[in-house]
Amino acid sequence: MSNATSQSSGTREEEVTFEPHELFFSRTDERGVVLFGNDVFLRTSHYPWEEMSGAPHKIVRHPDMPRAVFWILWEALKAGTPIGAYIKNRAKNGQPYWVFAIITPISGGYLSVRLKPLSELKPKVIEVYERIRTKENAEKLEPQASAALFLEEIKALGFKDYPTFMAHALSKEVEARNTFMTRTDNPAMMRYRNMLDALSRIEASSTKIVAGFANIKTSPINMGVVAAQMGQQALPLSVISQSFSDMIEEIRNGIATFVARADTVAAEIHNGLFVTCANQIQNEVIDIFEAGDDTAVIEAEGKFLSELEERYLQSGLQHMVEEITQFHNTCKRLTRTLSGLSVTSIIGQIESARIGQQGGGIDDIMRQLDGFQERTRKELASIQDDSTILRDALEHEIASARGVDAGAQKRRAG
Image (cartoon, rainbow, N blue to C red):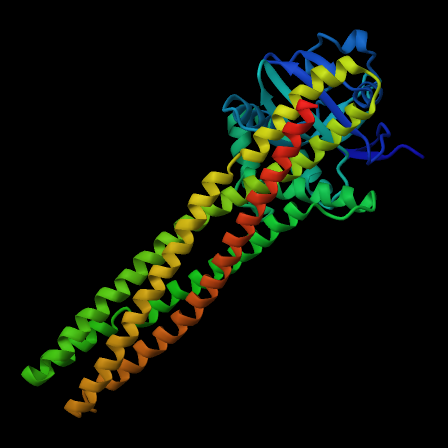
């Protein structure tokens, strides 16, 4: 197989060859000094263990890498948060090689597992990195300032923030790797993607409801004005007008809370997607160790991986349960409020017919409110269905994670 090429700074570089099914694995102390590296890492980097052991991991850093990426990476690691990133490294002989790295804080240091990037995101990331690195060099940017520019580039690609991009990127790389190895995708990964699809539909429905308020925001006020002009006989309509106003405001506030909570739920789902994909890759590393002959490596390095696996399985799930439960409850509360709005609308129609007022605009106002009510009912029903999909998918994921966790504990006990 011929070596790949890497486009950088206007030149084409011959890349170190390694296969898509191969995985890098290394462990460092808290200073980034290499304590262990598997044979794939050593072979690809062209460093013998005698030189790699005790060396700073940045020995393989490529000068094309933006400082912004490492600033974001270290901010996450210092906070105790796992992170993933596309990294361009440089072997001892000067050849580059690209990886997607999953780096996790562990007791006494950091654990890094890397895979070969195969997805359509890689060329886009290369372009972003080149632009950021050019700015860093030309403008002598500090890493934090460069990181801010990098995050703007990430948003321009369609991602809200770096964790969202990171989760999407890892899922696409795992998917591409599964395709290359003719394997089906992880069911848990598909569940998280389905949750994201459901959440996207919920956000679209919420947006439609918010837009609907613009069309009727003055309707209850106008009804009250007309009722006041009609005198004592229209007093019930004044009360109905106030009821409409109160319930519409309750729906407005509920939707605002809904939209804000959707951002939190989206962050948790993306975290779960990242954790799930990282867990799949790290399980493969555990399997590689267990299939080997080096018992010392299995006991020492496998221990770190098994502990990490268990932590990943538990990460964020309980918080997601709480968030999605609140999400679901908010939807049910808004549906009940809308039912009250329906009753109020019927009473309003009865009062309007009793008074027989046609010229004052009451009927037109009622039609506007009825239209808003019908459109909102439709969107809330859609939200209710999708929030149920979210909840059911999460319950399935929790049950599955418990089963896998039990298997991991059994494996360690064995």
